[in-house]
Length: 545
Image (cartoon, rainbow, N blue to C red; front, top):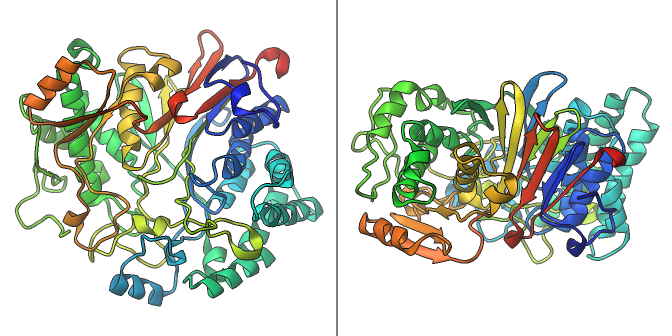
C-alpha cells in the first residue's frame, strides 16, 4: 500500500500494508499518514514515530492526548543499540501531596489531583533529539494542520502552544539538538509551564512548575529474555512489561507447537502462565528508581523452574500465587502477601535503514472537557491512579515516583537485527494480547496480518491496575476467568470449562494490537493492525522514498 496524505480518511487507508522502505501501524489513519510523510521526506523511524504520536493526540483523542504518557522502545540499527524511552510523568514532588493521597486515596473519578506531570511531549522531542534526523517543526506539521482545520475548543490553544515551541526552535542559535532542547524547555520550564501552573493552581492540582522543570525522559536499557532464538525486549518494572518475559520463560518449558494453536492444552497452559506472571507483577513491580525489584531472581532459571511446576495441566488455578524470588520458593508463605482497562492507542514504525520503534501512547483523559490545560490546550489524564496507597508496597505513591503503568510495547530481535514490533491497547490485557500475537509469530510463523486477527483469549485473574486502594486484595478482578473469541472451537471451550476455567466469549476485540515484521531476507516490511479495533497501516515503496 502506498502512503496517503494528511487529509486521508479512515476509508482510504487499510489495516495492513507492506513496503521496502518503511511502514507504520497505529490508530487513526491521519496519524499513520503523518508517520509515512516523515519517512518519505527522509526522516527515520524515530522522526516518524514522533510525528505519528503527536498526530495521535488529535486523531485518537480520548484514548490518548499530548499531556499523557508514552513508553517507547527503539532499535537503532546504525548504533547497534536497543533503548527504552520512559515518557511517563511523575507524581508531585511536594511531600504534602503524598500525605493527602495516603489520607484520602488517589482519585479515580476524573479529578485533576490524579494527573501526573505530562510526559508525552518531552518523549516526542527526546526521541527526535537522541535518535532522529529532523526538526520538531517537521514532525508536528501534520498535527498543526489538523488543529488549524478546527474542531474542538482546545484545538487553537494547543496549536498556539506548539507554535511557541516551533518559534523557540527556529530562533535558538545552536545545533539541531540544542534547538530541540530549547523548544522542549519552553514547555517544561518557560512561559508554557507558567500557564500550566496557573491552571493547576486554579483546578486544585498538586502539580507546580517545579514538577514540570524536574521532568525528564529517562533513556534506559530494555529488560530482555531469549525465547526460541529471539530476544524479546520490554520496558522495566515501571511498566508491566517484564511480566511478559516471565510468561515466556515459563512457556519455554512446554512444546506449544505440538499442542496445536488454540487447543485446550495450549490455551490452558498460556492462561496459567499469565496468572503466575501477573501475580508477581502485582506483588513486586514498581518504579525501580524507588524500589529494589528482584528482577534478576524473577527471570532466573531456578525461579522459573520452581514456578513452572505450579502449572497443573488438568486444573485451572483459583488462587493468586506470587512467588518468592529471593529465597527461591514457588509461593510466598502465609502472611507475607501484602494486604491488599483504560484509554490507550498504538504505534509501531520501521524505516529503510533497519531502525524500528514500538510505542504505546495513552492518557486516561478525564473530565467533561478532558482536562485541557487552561490556556495551553494540553490535555492531562489521571495516570496516578496506577499507583496505590498500600504502605510498603513497591507501587505505593511517593513524591516524584512513576506509576507502574500497563502500557507495554515490545521489540523482538533476531541475530542482532530487529525482527518485529508490537503495540497493544487494553490496560491489563496488553501483555496478554502481546503474548498471543508474539507466539503466533514465533511458534506458528504467522504474518502480522494473520497474527493480529487470529482469535485471542485473556483472563482477569489479577489485580486491576487502575484501582489504587490500600488493601490490594480488593483490587482483584475475576478469579479463574477466561475470556475467549467466539472463533475458538466450542469443544475446546467446553474442555477448558471442565478444567475449572470460567469461560465467557465475545465477538468484539480482546485488546487492540498492531504489529510489524522486518523481513530482512526479502527486503520487506509488513505491518498490520486489528481492523475490528479501528487500527490502520501504511507502507513506503522505493519509488516513494
